[in-house]
Image 1 (cartoon, helix red, strand yellow):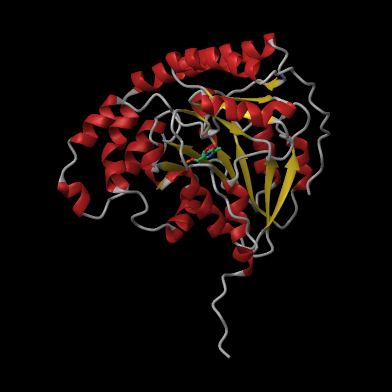
Image 2 (image 1 turned 90 degrees about the horizontal axis):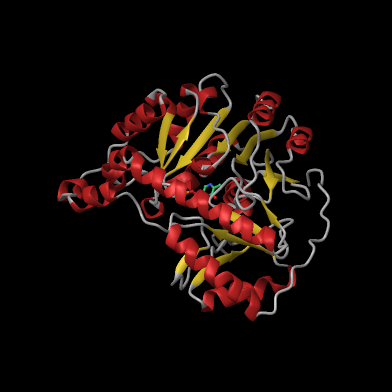
Length: 369
Ligand SMILES: Cc1ncc(COP(=O)(O)O)c(C=O)c1O
């Protein structure tokens, strides 16, 4: 009898991840995308794209030089990727052997765990505490000789919490044998970048995405930054044509349109203050955010609220399943008129489901599991 084809054990035991993508009609305040659009300069470049952009294999290096110039680093320190998702995947593939440990602070972005588990590594999670603060000391205590990858979103998703430079540098210093990824997907909205440390700390990696502030989630464009020597290893694993030619053709326009980005960020920050004020005035527990979204606690009303908002044409994200986030909903901020609409519909939705604020059950910070 022949043996049937089986996936690797690590893959067979991996749980399926399905972001709720189907039927996302309406105002999409559920995925932390830029719901305002993207720079008109990018659209202009897109419209003037010729057949040549499509019929030849894309060249990544000119794009890497452009990003390096923009960030004030050398192009050898930049690897363009198919979104930050691919950057995380490449780090896992490059550094993790089966049985190694990957360390994450939860709740956080799901893909760290998925890519690490797929290699056969063990994922150790350190739970954030009551205030959803970055669990720096818990992470430090959880580092072992087997730790080979540490992923930290700064600011974090879904909490909007930030880590300080000192905390991040202490972690990189305590784990020289591990790749330490600081995911700066939301750095345009708050927190302090570690970019100035690049090249000085061999095990430090930073990633940036064009999916959030730049409004280009559909392009799948990200950048992994790290020491020249380490990025050489990652380039061995990366597909030579991982970033598509159209995204590369538009990259310069995306980087150059400071005015568009600044205008959009200003609207998000204003919207964030307004939403946090709204929660404060209604005694709705929420976590002050440094990103383009706010996480709040609606307890038993969570499901009804998400449904009611959807009926009103606004998608918000149920985060009930995230560790420590029972009863929580995350809402992304958009431009001024979208915030206006949100703050008109949200109180009405809450009234229509008979919402009364509930105190959040106490959550103790936990050691790594
Ligand atoms: C922290 C974080 N990193 C990365 C991503 C994904 O970035 P990309 O679209 O570049 O793959 C997200 C998306 O939600 C995120 O929250």
